[in-house]
Amino acid sequence: MLFKDLGLSAELLRSVKTKGYEEATPIQQQAIPLILDGRDVLAGAQTGTGKTAGFTLPQLQLLQQTYNENQKRHPRVLVLTPTRELAAQVHESVRDYGQYLPFRSAVIFGGVSINPQKQKLIKGVDIVVATPGRLLDHVQQRSIDLSRVEILVLDEADRMLDMGFIRDIRKILNIVPKQRQTLLFSATFSREIKTLAAEF
Ligand code: AMP
Image (cartoon, rainbow, N blue to C red; front, side, top):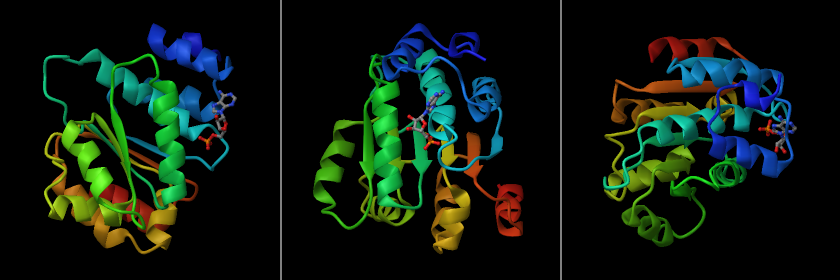
């Protein structure tokens, strides 16, 4: 299946073309229409399958459909990842695929100074890619407002559980609005993942 048959906007098709892709991978073919339809999605996908574009492209399109340039920016999409490396990679994809769209994004992870991240957040962003611990630091210091998140993505959810982030994830899930779209990507579906998914 070609990207142009997936119902994506002209700006997104242009960025996909800039990347040099024409055919959608199986996870993209399956996930993109469901996400555009507003569904919650549980997806089994390893790294290398094209999963990042599978959740990034439709989330950008959903933002685009209801974008109001006069409204003050606030985080509408939150992507949680287990590591800073993955957060940086996902953020790069958000920038690449969103290069012809007006959205602003920030990447947030620990091990570096919190102040530049705060400044970025204060200026206003639409999309936040974060690791759980540092995100909660920002919540505690009130430098981020998660009360209007519309789409929550848990990327590599199994790795986040393996790394002991379950309590942080539960906290974050309780802060974001109940009324939202949730996308959970995981290479494996252990009992813990199924329990987490069922809970939320
Ligand atoms: P991911 O599974 O998201 O880590 O993506 C793995 C790699 O595949 C990344 O380098 C992507 O840029 C690339 N990729 C994503 N979608 C496609 C596609 N439809 N065709 C070819 N490569 C892709």
